[in-house]
Amino acid sequence: MEIFGIALVVLLLVVVAATVSALLRDGRGHTPPITSDQPWSALDLPSVNYTLRIF
Image (tube, rainbow, N blue to C red; front, side):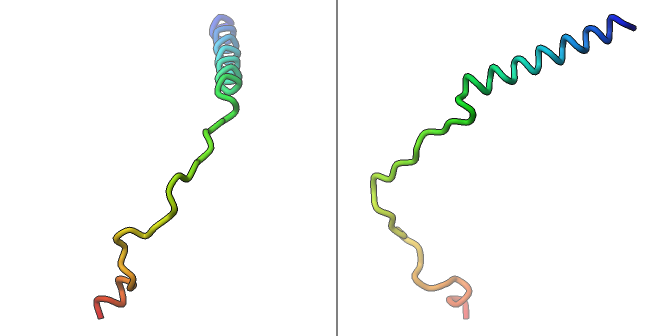
């Protein structure tokens, strides 16, 4: 029974170490900045609300 306890503790330590390592390698959730190259446009969206068009 002690072997299972020791194995569980070792497994938890490995999981915690892998999690910390992954977080440090990833840059703590680093995402690239969003760049806007073209101005925003509505393209083919209707100028009238859909609920108003059916009446």
